[in-house]
Length: 240
Image (cartoon, rainbow, N blue to C red; front, side, top):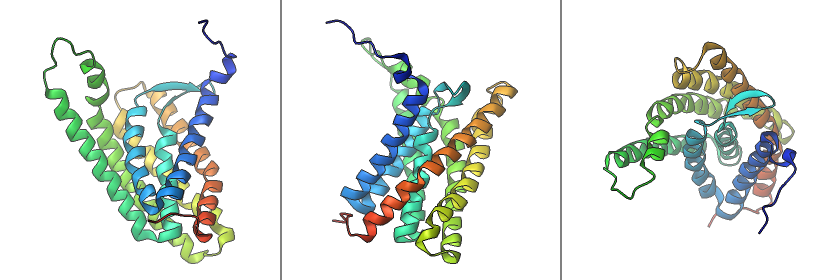
């Protein structure tokens, strides 16, 4: 059978980035719709673990070098904002601690798995080593950045919600809390994870572009926060 050939632009990194963005956001809404608050809690370990694997992949996006994983990681902020909006800051903080636990467990279990001596038919050990042997540094960077930024996001969202409780200010609560939190996250994570591993110019380019992309994701996720709020107020969420 002849191979299918698609126009080059369809498979461009920019198109794939948009597809990945909407795949994440619609997955969150689907998890929320069918599994309620539990679905949001489930998404936290999914996003944290996948993002820490994806961040190892370097890509060119809009002619700029960036790390993959920004979308999936940033989606966790949408989840905590939904929890803060619909259930309160206590539920959002619980999600943050679930993320801590899931990442710690992944690092410990996968690094123990790497200690097993593979047999002669094994073909995956080196691939696993390439991903998970570097994960402790990435995971430590992620844990510190995640803890500081997410707890700030929960606090900031509550701060703005108490002062601007009206639904028309939902976009302001979302962006005012998330954009500062994403700045903290980008600075902390990039310095711990990549300082000394990359040329200085490439390092600061990744820092700047990482934050810029997270800001774009934060702005785009606002309509999805409104959708989650509407689904909740109209009783469309399955909490069973």
